[in-house]
Each structure stands twice: as structure tokens, then as C-alpha cells.
Image (cartoon, rainbow, N blue to C red):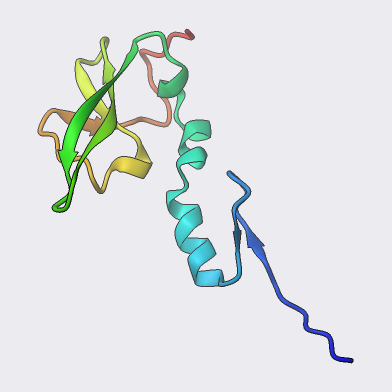
Length: 102
């Protein structure tokens, strides 16, 4: 009889499991649930959610957008910064002076 010990890596934000350390680290840096916890914008009264079409080279998809009425900008969550190329957008702040609890 033989036994095999495997190390599993788990994302602390969403609970997803990985067998390879590199895959786990790559996922944790861009996990969408991580940024929901970090940015107060998701819980702000001034934020408006919408959607806009995006073409990724193969197909047309809908992407969530977040617009801040107070700042007058589209806000990019950290998870979406690589795919959002809007000229009128800024990264979501970790602390905002305009924050008002919804």
C-alpha cells in the first residue's frame, strides 16, 4: 500500500482550491471577491451600477460598470483594470472622502 500527500492551496477570499502554488498566487492577486472587501465604493450611496458592451476579439460580452455621482467618473474595480480602457475612468479608491453609506 502506498500513500500520497498532496498540498492544496485555497483562496482566502472565495475558497477556490488549487494544486499548484503559482496558479493559486495568480488567482489571489486578481480574485474579484478580494476587492469587494477592500473598496468602500461597492457599499456607497453615490455609486450607480450599469453595464456596457465589450468586444474581446472573439465575442461581444456585457461588462459591469460603476459610476460615482459625486466624483463624476466611472470607477474601475481592481479586478477589472486590465480590461477597462475607458478614457473617463479612475481606479476605485481604498478610502474615499465622499463615501456615504447606502
